[in-house]
Length: 72
Image 1 (cartoon, rainbow, N blue to C red):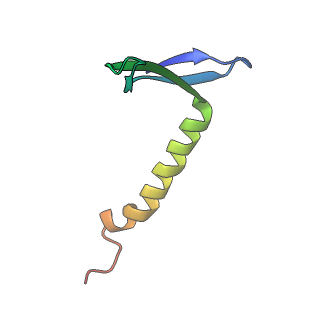
Image 2: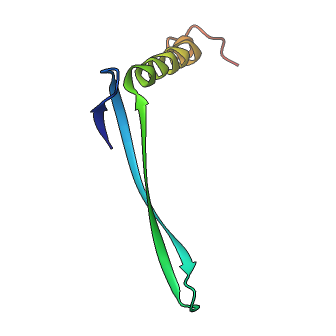
């Protein structure tokens, strides 16, 4: 994981994964072929999503933590 600057100078969060899949060569021997994937997303959008999720958690659990919800 890491960070990079996007084409519009936005901050990006970058994830990289290497995946090796089994293959069979023309002569029948087993081998592996490696693929490398790199995915990037706008960090500001991710932070906004996290803030929204945290607000949902606050409203979902906040009242019960403060004792204002009914006890059954």
